[in-house]
Amino acid sequence: MTTLKKFPLIDADRNLCLDAVEIAASRGLCLAGSDKWSIRCQKLSAGPTAGLHDIVLDSGAMAISLLPERGMGLWKGVCGHLPLGWDSPVSLPRHPAFVDQGDRGNLGWLHGFNELLCRCGLSSNGPPGSDQGDQLTLHGRVANLPAHHVEVQIDPAGPGRLAIVGQIEEASMFGSHWLLKSTLATTAGSKTFDVIDEVTNLADTPQHLSLLYHINIGRPFLEAGATFAMPHQEVAPRDSRAAEGIDEWQTYLGPRASYAEQAYFISPLANSNGEALAGLINSNRSAALVVRFPVKQLPCFTLWKNTQADGNGYVTGLEPGLNYPNFRAFEREQGRLPLVQPGETRRLKVSLEVLDDAAQVAAFTTEVTASQKGKPLVFRQPAGGYSPV
Image 1 (spheres, rainbow, N blue to C red):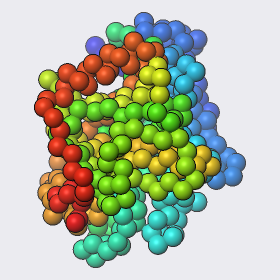
Image 2: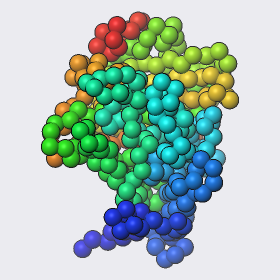
Image 3: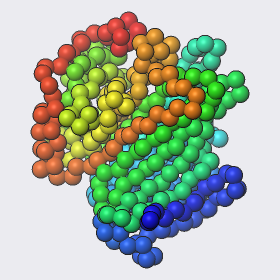
Image 4: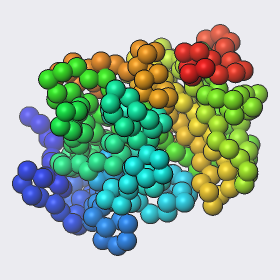
């Protein structure tokens, strides 16, 4: 007998849209993992946020804000005294109605970019351009599409599972037709949150799937002397600019007004469970944000370094993906865009974990060392197969 409890928040089929909801332990739903958990939903109504729902999933130890109208993206979070996210020049979450993706030569996606986690895809990601008759915008459409069905799910079994489940369609006449079912889940009292996506091809023809998780981290994890750690087989600079920093690709500068972004394409190594792990560690090694994902599901990883001035967006990106964020035609030629058959579903999972003391960080670095099999190959210049050179 199931104990799962469901609470609908948005359902376009029933024209249901709740503006203010709070579900919490204080209302009689007791979970073994914590008595401080809560799920709060409010509809925003001011400025560029108008029409967005902000759903805060709080495990009692860590809280993350989810925006269903922005592709089920994660806006920001907090774990104890540690804020999660970054300070973007786009200071407020922006309703997709205020994001013209065709602006700035199809770079308009940047007008809404300020999330802790946003998806790039589903029909394309990477730079804009023309491919097979499609005029592609930067990083695709899914981050600017609203969920048409959202519900809270609570399972009191065990420590108590808390989840927000949403569904998004990316569809076009004479184009692709994807259904994304996304789940943000944790357990009461946990400092780990899972993002679980099921992407289904609803078209009657096979479609190439593109998907990258753009996980963006700023202070206090990112600072002068912060380091990136990840078991890997190979790493290659995306372009000549990234090649300039290949000797320091795993370390970070403080903010620099003249800094130009650098990106590195990484082939991750899996541990004995088939899982890759990557983390950004602060300078005194007392805190880290760790990303985990199955390598068979997400075989590509991009490290984006953007340590420009604070006011311009001091940030780094830890980005697991099906593919690297190159132009779609190049990624298709490399065989990195899976061809999904009609009715087929691809399941993908990314986990975010906060480490908030030196002992936890030391255990993480030990795990990285144990998973690093052999000496990785470091390309000093952009490499064929990784970048169009």
